[in-house]
Image (cartoon, rainbow, N blue to C red):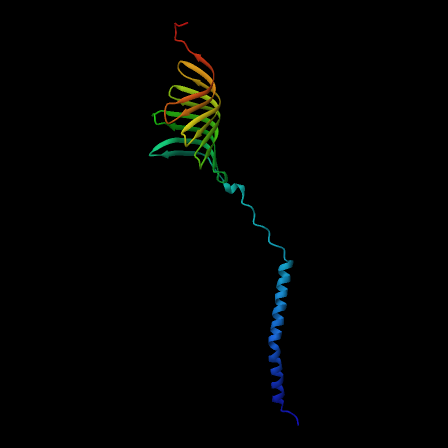
Length: 199
C-alpha cells in the first residue's frame, strides 16, 4: 500500500529541518574562516605621520613680554623677531631690547643681537654685541644671562665697564638687581681718567 503524497513530503521537510542548524553552523564557520584569511593577508595600514616640526614652532614678527611679580614689574622685553619652540619651552629672539627693574629704583637697559627665553624658569640669555646701561655706567660684553629666582644678571665672558671717571676690564660680572651690588669676579685692568690740570 502506497503512502499518500502529503505524508512523504512531510517526512522530507522534517529531514531538512533537522539538517538546517548544521548547514547554518557550517556556513558560519566558512564565513569566519574567510574573514580570518582576509585579515591575515591584508597588509597593516601605514602608521600615522609623525607630527610636523612646524607644528611645534610659531614665528612672530615682533614680540613684547613683561614679567610681573609681587605687584611690580621685573623686566620688559621687546624683540623684532621671535620663534616659539613649544617642545623645548623656549622662545628664540632677535634684535633684543630689555629693561630690568630693581628695588633700588635703578633701571638696567640691555641691547643684544639674539637670545633665548625659557618659558618655564623665566630665565633669559642674550648674546652678540651685548650692551648694558646702568646709571652712568656702560657695560660691553658678548653674553649676559638673567636668573629669575635670584633676580641677577651675569656676564660670564670678558667685560668692559666704562664710567665718567674710569674704565674697568675683567671677566665674570654679577649684577644684583635687588640691591646695588655689582661684583667683577676677575679684575684685569682699571684705567682712571684724571681731571684736567692733574698730572
